[in-house]
Length: 171
Image (cartoon, rainbow, N blue to C red; front, side):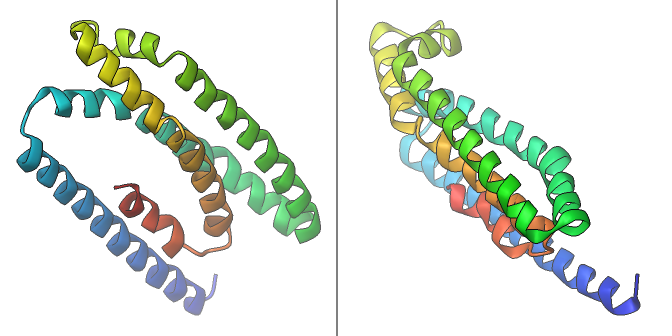
């Protein structure tokens, strides 16, 4: 690796770190605003319960992206051909898009069950509100999963700024 490419990686890494930290600070600021506005009320509990599943799926897709997709994309792109990469990527994109739609439909259809599983101590009214919130946020599963897949394309091509903005855009 040449000295110039190490400098480029360092420059990209510093911008990635800066944007990631800015995203964390923005998310923390958003949580402080929510706590100041709503306090530690039932609505806050419903919000936390409602975003639990989408957040866990985001973490899952982040791990898959980093461990599986980025190395596989780089292998196909650099060892085979860019045309072969785009064929593989489009097939994978369609498959994952379909899988995410199925997951979102499951959360839409069984939001009441998920509310009961995640918050067994809630009253009937709070369970209904939690169920409605889960329905509202179910489509974020699709957007989050696809954004992680698209960020993998940017990352293996050494373009880090767009993927680093994802945590900031989440809130």
